[in-house]
Length: 207
Image 1 (spheres, helix red, strand yellow):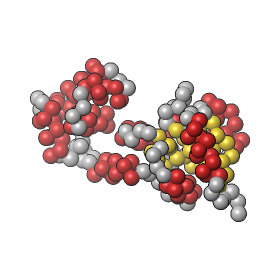
Image 2 (tube, rainbow, N blue to C red):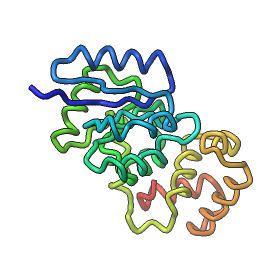
Image 3 (cartoon, rainbow, N blue to C red):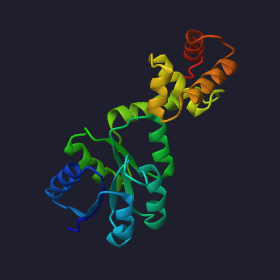
């Protein structure tokens, strides 16, 4: 039986080694290489020619979202599974838009990770439960929304009770940018308060 080859790009050495050991214990799977950064991987991963790349998002240097485009260009037949602690809607959709085939959170049990590798090789799109729920919720939203994706994201965070500074920290943007987005939401929804914005957005299934 031919082994399914896997490359791991993960900066956490403990996790990287754990994934390698656990995957290599599965019959038919072989971790052909593992790297601590995309920069390291870019030197050899094309020669590795893995069937699947398990890719962390928060890497030092080039992040995982940016790395997807390079990997897919060099290895178009390779499947990419994102492994991350983050479940932000924007990151999920950026990863999938760039060509990732699956999106798992790092607290996924190893059995889920193994099943996901099998699934992508069969043409599937494995996702953690919370991520899948997020994708479904997004499709259920009003596709005619006047709000941009970022405005929608910020309004959802406002509806969760997050402050402007918390939103800025979570999205890696400054507080004034958040303020501008909220102001634009008010204008588009013709409201004057957070409460009215949330009420109007829920009524029209914008969030």
